[in-house]
Image (cartoon, rainbow, N blue to C red; front, top):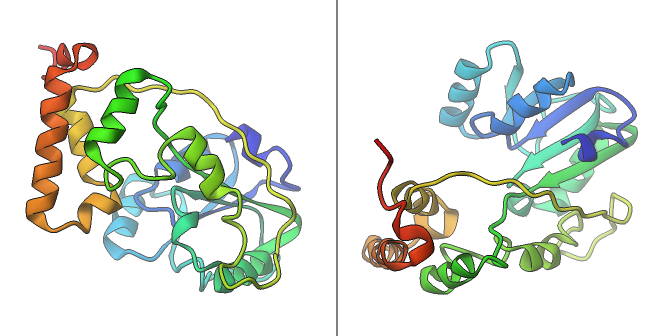
Length: 217
């Protein structure tokens, strides 16, 4: 977060596609003046419940409910790939102050770890997609700021950086997280259950993960 916000000309941050507010909370913790914008009413309600002090508005990347030049940075957590940049690009540029920045942040899986690499093969692209591993992420997001229609770019050359972090998980909690991925959610139910069954079986049998097949007492 510090890396993303360091070049911004001021403290006003827009969390665009804010969801339930995980990135919003992290942004606010840096001391930034955060506004959250989210199109889904249920997610926005959860954000408002958990972060009552944050300004939270209904809107989207293609229709941002803010005045011109009103923010210094636009952040998007695991969201830029959903934006129609032919429309969202001009909107984001409109609300940014001169010298403002657009930063997309993604969480990925470290497939340099051998069992994670095998999990990607077992789960298939719906579970571990092209943006979900470091090498794929770099390729898939290098042009995320550009309109797919080939129109003019609204932003300068992108910079990319990676930062290591980890989470302690059980096999059950990891499987449950994978089940929430967009590719899994849109699969036919029978196919989704088959994929999740394969993933559970792999994690239960894999020596590196079998000991975490259930929560500790």
